[in-house]
Image (cartoon, rainbow, N blue to C red; front, side):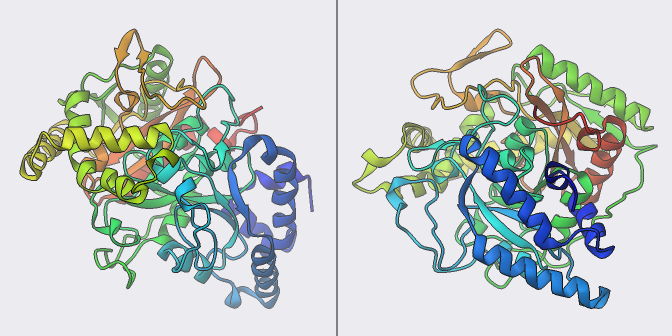
Length: 477
C-alpha cells in the first residue's frame, strides 16, 4: 500500500495509474486520506462533513470496475474529490456556512455532483466556505475558522477556502470550487495550488446564479494536468442550466509548449498595491516564461481599484448582495459581520448607480483587459497584492495596509474580480513562489475569451520550469 502521507500526495493521474497496475486500490487510497484527516482535520477544519458510507460504497464499486478491466473503468474512477458545501447534494445538509440555514437539507443535486458520480469519482468530504461564500477568507459562526496549512496566521483564502486547505494538507486528491469574485483563484494562491475559473457558461451551475455572468464553478488540484482532467469532466451543457455551453474544448493533459507565444505580464492591475515578495515572485514567473521560450511583454491594465470595486458592487447589489439580504430577512442578527457588511456595502453603492450605468462600467473594464492583451496570446498578473490577510479577521470597521498603501476595503488588494467582470476570459491560477511569511503567492494566467487551452499551455510550461508539487519539498511543513 505504501506510506500514508505519500499516498495522500498522489495526483489523480498517478492514482489512476496505480489503480490500473493494481499496486493501489481506491479503497486503500480512501483509507489513507481518512487516516490523514484524522490527524490534521481537528486543527485544519477544512471539512464540514465526511461522507464515509457513501464514499466507501463508491470506492468498492470502483475497485470492482478496475478488477473487471479497462473497458469497465470510468474517466475518474476511484479518485477522491472533496466537494464544496455550497454545491448541493440531494438529501444532505446544505447550510452555506450560515446559522440561518443550520438545519437545511438540499432537495436537488448540483450538476457537478451528477458529473462526478457519472465519472466514478469518490466524493468523500464536503468543504468549508465563509457565510454565503461572500468573502475572500474562510470562517463563519457556523463552522468556525479554517486554517491555512502553510501558515496559521494568514487566511487560506475564500470562498473555496476549505477546498484549498484540504488540497494543501493532502486530505483530498481533487476538489471543486466556485468563483464569483476570485473564490477559486484566491485560495489557490494562498494554498499553493492550481485552480481554474472557466469562462462563464463553460461549466454548468444551478439557477438562478447560472444567469449571473460573474458566477463560475470549476476545478482545483495540485497539478495542471489534474485540473485539466477534472475540467474536461465538468464542462459541457447540462439540462438544469440552459446557458451552459455545448461542445467544450478537450484540454490536453500534456499540452504543447509555449515557445513562440507572446505573453503579456502586468505586475499589478491599475493601482492595486503589491508587496515586494509578491512582485519578486512575479519576476520568477517572468524568468520561467522566457526560459520556456515565450516572448514576454510587460504591460499596464488601465483600470483603478476603485473602478473595479464600484463596478462589482453595483452588480452584486442586484444579485449576490441582494440574495444575502433576502436570506437574512428579519434575522440579520444571525449573520456574520462580514456578510452583513457585504450586503450593506453593495446596496449602498448600488443605490448610487443605475443598471445601465453598471453596464457602462463593465464595458470600460472589458475594453481595458482587451487593450492590455492586444497582440499577445495570454496575460499573466498576480492573484493578490499580499498573501498576509489575517486568519479570522472579518475586516469590518478597518482596512489594511499593503506595500505602504492604506486600503479602506480588503477587496482592494485582490486582482481577481476584474476577470469576473470580464467573465468570458478563462483564468488559471498557479503558484508563483513563497512569500516572506512562508505562505504561497500566486499568479493568474488569463487567456482570450473562451481560449481555455492557452491557459493550460502556459500553466503546464510554468509547472515544468518551477516544479511546485512535483518537487517533494513543496508543501506545508
